[in-house]
Image (cartoon, rainbow, N blue to C red; front, side, top):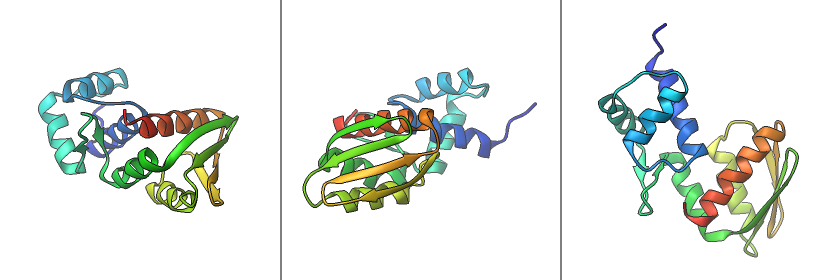
Length: 144
């Protein structure tokens, strides 16, 4: 069965959000592991169409996640999780801005967030999505 470009680009979106992708080659390998046979040239076209950007740290990021990445890197102090609930500690006064960026990013499996002055509660659809989201926030806050 031939898989569609939109399906492949959806998987690329997930891969970029879930891990630190530094090269087109590693993206091709990740796609193959998920059942998509494609060439580096195809991935290069997808990157251009999707508007992926490479950060100074060398990792690809989705354009809609760039603002989120910057805010999390600059303003998040700590993150912890209990099942599907993720608590993010931010700099004083920054929680509502970070929560707004999280909500705008439309992350899969994230039902919503509640923000105070320096704390955000994020509700994921299940424990697995909560763990994935926690890992993503940790990567973004450390600049990976």
